[in-house]
Figure 1 (cartoon, rainbow, N blue to C red):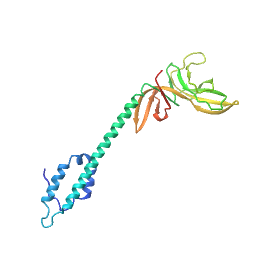
Figure 2 (cartoon, one colour):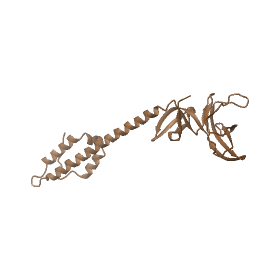
Figure 3 (cartoon, rainbow, N blue to C red):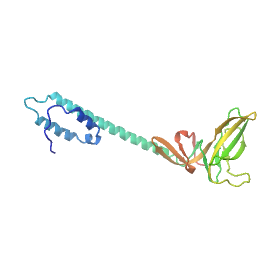
Figure 4 (cartoon, one colour):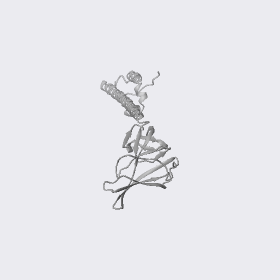
Length: 221
């Protein structure tokens, strides 16, 4: 390796700062540093030699930078391992049913709902809307938080078209509407992925929901 003459004095801090930005070079350049240091010693002015303390500073600086590189590499490796562990854990969610206030996909099978009427409600009405937001059904249900199923059939007993349906609950007291709230539905998880640090679950029908919006999980029925 050919090394030109190096000026007398300590290696400029600007060169060290530049080196810290190139981790791959620093991590493997200890031998190069020794060659540079040797060349510096060979080319110093014999009438004005470099102080031994200057060499010590250079060695200490390089050692510190090298240690920081190793620390950064270690932290990066730990971060990757934690990410893999998180995804491995999420993989266990695939195939389970998540409960969230999102539309559900009707494919002919009943849809499990989890209503939450107002505490003082005397009457509760389930409102069903299609993908266009049009109301297709209103059903009086018990004032209870017990799970119920929506069969997905019309007034003639015929199956409704496949597609996305959303649900909301109207709570009444003394014949007056006091609250309208979305109804949680159970949908099977088909995929779990990380998007910009946010865990997103893909439900039946292509519905995307952040994992933070899921308030319950259960085995697929």
